[in-house]
Every structure is written in structure tokens, then in C-alpha cells.
Image 1 (tube, rainbow over the protein chains, first blue to last red):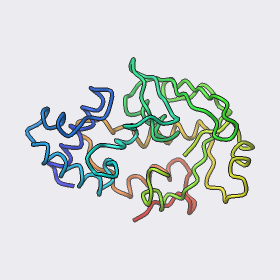
Image 2 (image 1 turned 90 degrees about the vertical axis):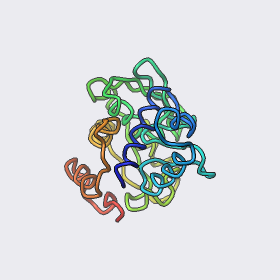
Image 3 (image 1 turned 30 degrees about the horizontal axis):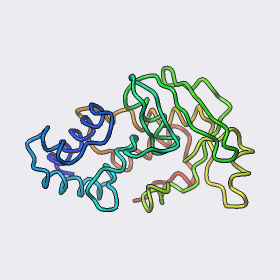
Length: 147
Length: 70
């Protein structure tokens, strides 16, 4: 990954946090010295490097892990905002990335009962829950949306 | 990558499919904080595979399931 692509990635993530949602290529362009076309080309390279995930058309951000650009079953309240996480791991990851306490809301995929976890100083207040990862690590990026 | 009420709920949800890996939520939180801690740092640089594998290893996630792809 080139230094310019690392900078584009970091600028994109910062704008995601500032806006509270995924930025468009135009918004990243306006905040940097790159044209929208250069932003899209850079995002494509970052997608191939697994530094972010684009939608099928390659024109919008789908994931800036741990953040999700689209609604999911994992919501996180922290820093005065609600965020969507890509999965349970990423839900805790949002608190970690923002260095803040938070509240995670989801539902059990088996029974549908609501689950709520408060994370304080990196520790969940509920210890009875379990995390299940179905896909082996070596295959995570074969279909990262499914993973 | 989902959160469940208990291992019994995982088993029922799998419905005969091969299980993956199940961790206590405390371990998940440790993992997430080690993995994502630097993602918004202005000095962020890409994690090498070995870096990420070391995070997993430090948390005792050493079996084949947790071996990252090349």
C-alpha cells in the first residue's frame, strides 16, 4: 500500500467518524486534494488490499471495518451516536476504535431475544453470552460480507 | 460472526452444520480491542498478516481455525 493510499484510507475513516456515516467519493474529494475519480480509483486499490470494502458497483463504501455503511443487526451507541457494526466482533471493535465506552444492541440469531451489552473500559458487563465464528480465518476474505 | 445467548443457542442455530469457533464474550471483547484499537489513529498503517496472527496467538487462539490466509 502506497503512502498516498494509506493517507486516503485514513482521511476516509476520519470523515466516516466525523459524519457518522460513510462518506461519498465527492465528500472525500472535497476534504482532500484528490478528485472524485482519484478517490474512487484509490478506494478500489484499498478494497483489493482489504483496507475497506466497496459495494458491488465499486462506487460506495460498504464497510470501513469495524463500521458498516449499511444497517445491520449490530448497533452500537457510543460517543453520542448510533453506529452499525458488520458483526459481533466489529461491534466491540467500534468501542475499541473510538476508545470509548458503549452499548451494543443485537438479537440472538437462534431465538431472536434482544441482547444488550454495555462495554466499559473495554470490558462487557454481561459475561454469559458467547461469540460464534462460523468461517475459518483463512477463508474470511473469500466473502467478507458473509463472514 | 454472531453473538448468542449461550452455547446451547449456537448448537440449535447450527442445526447440524459444522461448528466454527465459539468464544466467551469476554474473550471477544479482548480480541476486538486488540484488533481494532488503532483503526482511527492518524498514524495507522496496514497490519501485516504476522501482526494479526500474533494478536490471535496472544489470546490463545492458536488452532488451525484461527490461522489467517496468506
